[in-house]
Amino acid sequence: MSAVNPFGQVLVALVTPMTADGEVDWPAVEKHIDDVISAGADGIVVTGTTGETSTLTDPEKIRLVEVGKDVAAGRAKIITGGGSNETAHAIELYKHSEQAGADGIMIVTPYYNKPTQAGILTHFRLVADATDLPVILYDIPGRTGVPIKYETILRLAKHPNILAIKDAKGDFSEVSRVLNQTDLMYFSGDDANVLPHLAIGATGLIGVTANIAPAPYRTIVDAVNRGDLKAATAEHQRLEPLVRAVMTHVPGTVAAKYILHGLGRIGSPRVRLPLVGPEEWEAALIEDEIDLVQGIPGVDFRNFRPDRNAAAGGALPKVAGTTR
Image (cartoon, helix red, strand yellow):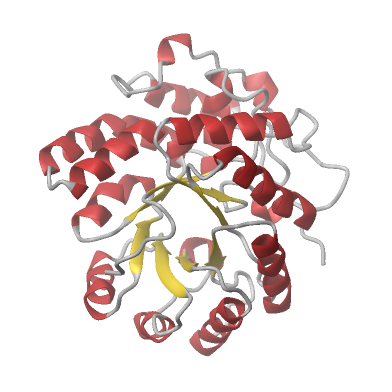
C-alpha cells in the first residue's frame, strides 16, 4: 500500500443542497460541509454521483471545489468527482478544478459510450496526464455500463498520478488481487460493504450515508486501523438499517436529502430532474427503516420530521447542466 494517502480515509460523497426551485443553496453547502468535517470526515468528494454531477453546470462544479476548500480550511481534503464521458471535457473540468484548489480528482469510467478497455485506458491516462493532482479511478459498472477490468487496472496502476480506486463493483477477490499486485489504495464505494472492504486491506470509504452519519464511519475506520474488528463490527451493525434506508429504495442522493431535511440539517430535500423525490410508498419504506435505527452517534431520529410534500417532484433549473 502507498505510504502516503493524500485523500483521507472517511470521505463523504457530498450531496449538493438545493433550494426548492433547484438552485444550489450555497449557505447550506457551507454548513453541510462544516457539519460532516466536524463529525469526523477527513475528505469530501464534491460533484460526484451523490452530488448530482450529471445536472450541475461546470461553473457550479468549480465553485463547489472553491467553497469546499474555503470551509475545510485544511481540516479535510477536497476531491472533485464526476468528470465527463467526453475525454476533452473531462480534461478541461479537472484542469479548472485543480486551479480552484482541489486536493485530488476522482475520474469515473466513461458512461453511455461503452468504450473498450483500450478506450477506458486511454481516457484515464489522458485525464491523469493533464493534471498534477492525485487520481482516484471510479469503477461503477452499474452506472457506466462497463467495468474497469483487472488487466486494465494493473496497467493504470503504473501511472504516477493514479493512486487509488473507488470500488462499487463488489468483486472482493479482484480487490485482493489488485492490492497484492499494485500500490493502489482502495476506497469502498458501496456503503453496505465498507467494513468488508476495510477488512481485506482497503484504505477507506467514499460514502453516501456518511452525509447523515460520518461519526460511525470514523469509528469503524479507527477501529480497523488499530486492529479492533469487534468494535468495527458493532458499529457496522448499528449502521445497517440507516444504510438500507439510504441505499435501497431510491437513488442515494434522493434518500440522503430526504433524511437530512427531515433532521433539519438542510433547508430543502429538492433534487434536479430527472431525479425526483420519493413517492409516498418509497418514503414510507425509508421511514420504516429509520424506525429501526438506534444508538448512532450524532444522529437523533426522535426529532425526525420528514416532509413528503417538500420532496415531491424534481426541479428544472434555469440553466441547463453539463455545458462545454
